[in-house]
Image (cartoon, rainbow, N blue to C red; front, top):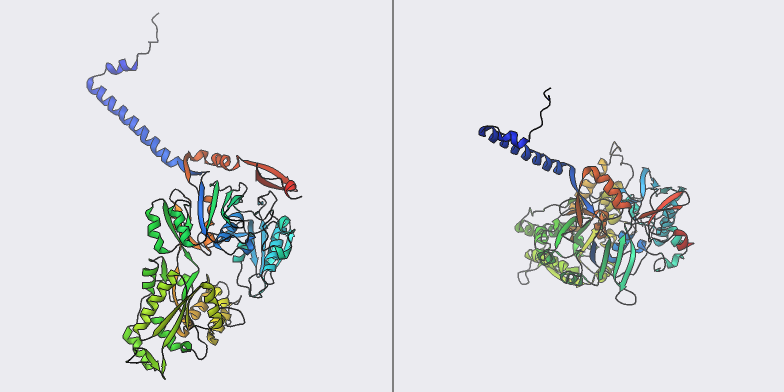
Length: 606
């Protein structure tokens, strides 16, 4: 019987028996199929493979300022604030866009002047102890003991422990500083309860560096018996937002901005901040750094002494001086456009300003109010009194350059100006003693209500008191601005729209009464190594900073290395990356997470 199944023939043999034209068509089709396969593989790879950060790397950060206070609630110098921000965490933290989000608190709510916070069950201090409501209550009591000023934000603030993870904070009616103050660092009660109140400011003993921030204290190198030369911090694996990608941050401390810049050129550091715009070109020429900028709450201006008997008591004269200052020249020539000109009392209103009046218009205004040019001196005179102003400025290069531009402008109008450069602390004394006609000065303000403690005429030590400026209209508007509920002339309190309307009135009154010549809002400048990624709000912007230490807001996302992984493996990869060095320790009914090298809570403190 014939075999029904024929043996399979090799494919090559079958193709070889085809006509030449069919073989060509087959080869072309096969080539197209292979090419299409590789295209599909490539696009699948693009669609399902992503880049993820890898752990590792060290950042060498340079900053100016001595470390006199290790207790973060007394941090004052840039170096102290840098250390406090990296080592410690608050109930809330700022985002790169300037808004507030939770940190140690899992969530929170506000009911009138009462704030309730629920603390994360995973929040721990660097020694393994859990963060509890008792730590929050004790920290707030320490801050209140620090500030005896009745005008301080924490005056009469009451914190109560509802349970181990819940705390209720009640603030006095009319306190406009919250909730921003809840970014204050929370300290471990089990460490600080042992330190007498009068010693907490200068305490530098055991446990002083323990916080709940993204990095923890490792070691330091001293340049003399008291002052550190550098401080090394290492990533804290149990930080509430996950272990930071960077392994270490080394903080190098310098005595002056010029020392800081020289250290960068010597390659001792690869990150620095708060530098003068004039240094930017030389720094970025090295090619190893990227410049980041951020908007700030800082506003600078010329503040007038309006006390009775002073020349600048006259609001018409102050108005002329305000209108004849070339703010755009200050921004361009002094700050290389790393600032924004303004005529408003809030930095958030900063925008390009153009002079809309001419020299002749203002010269005529001065003559109309009695100030006539003396042909011999070229200075304007009224009732035999020369228009001669004493301008006090801090002895800082940028301030001296600004003062020169201002005096050039005013001298064109026939106004004589004597500039006195003083150390910053002596400028404060001159303002306090009233020995000035005008002074270059700056303040910080973020929202309209911030103007209330700055400008309301009261017994508080503020700008209104220092410049002897008092306007009944402005005081009424500021009182309205500071109310919890809208004034009677507004029909609804559903939103803060009424507060914006009151601020518009405040701004109009300030432009009319001219207590100061508002000039510019500077940008915050921060140079980072080009290899470092995950910084800020996107692009080369850090977003918004309230304080220079805010540059570390998202430090846990900074990284120097990346790898490509399939999306399907991303979750598994992340678990491996964050948990491979962690171990669990049980403390009471809560779980603390620490690195294998972390001390046991019991052995360290009890």
